[in-house]
Image (cartoon, rainbow, N blue to C red):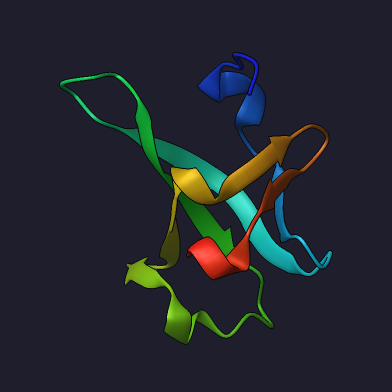
Length: 81
């Protein structure tokens, strides 16, 4: 994956491979030791069943290894969540 700044990812729509909306990217979590991104912090879509996600406050967390593409939207593989 090419390099992209966290600011460029801010407020992008997060969708799964089937095109279903997961939510809007709120923030990212990085590993302090390596600087690598570890999780996406996503404000879930109102209709999303969040039971299969790690949750905190009003956000869900998606492991960064689930990210498959970052363009106009962020595409994640739901099976890797």
